[in-house]
Length: 306
View 1 (cartoon, rainbow, N blue to C red):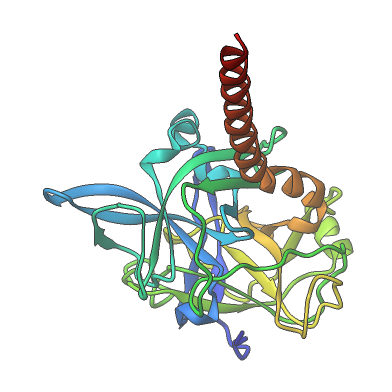
View 2 (cartoon, rainbow, N blue to C red):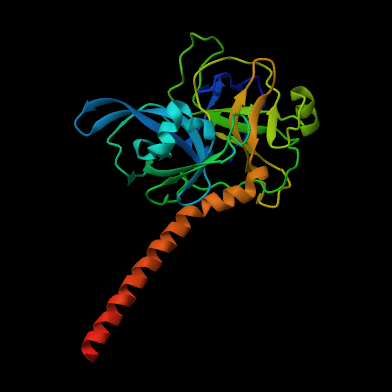
């Protein structure tokens, strides 16, 4: 996993209102799919081109944490009274694809270029109230096939401060001016994190469930929420060979304060419960099938005895 050299590229986020939190990479460096193989783009259909072909636009980002599970931000599904949380099958989760707007049928498929999956369930943290508990788990209809460009990311276990430079990724503007175009490809940006005491001082409250970053430059543009904050050399027991670990989920920012990431290590128990939902559902289905078969065999046995 490649980390960016420090420059003044940033990810900036802004909470306009209850239903509009729009983080974006500003003037980031183009990234390859293999650099962030765990990164997923949630896409919504915006236009029909022809029968069986739709234009899909990036809605939010997320990170693959299991064969069926994606970790993301709860506020991604907040608009229109949580419409996409209530009707998740409208959305697609796309991994391995670094373009923002894509023409595709939306059918679940695995190709060398990208993997498309339909969302079947979105689990919002029960205590979500932006920006608190801004975390969610989305489940897809078919398991991810792990490859060079599509893979899982380990999540942080400890609640350490991350003194080393981190990196985030998303779709943003190619410059710092509002009239600059949105990048058509995935961008990456180096991020410098704050210690928790400083974050709490700036916000004048306990910020242990957040990671704050001190952006040197800020800008406002429409882009990704729910995307990853990845750190290396953390000393976290879940990080192997200093390959990097998921420590935060892009949340939001006030005008005069810091950029906020949801600290994933504070939600380990909740994530473990949510990530097990699809597995438990699969087990439940198997148990039902086994039970039906046993009842059928018992019925046949009783008939033969009669």
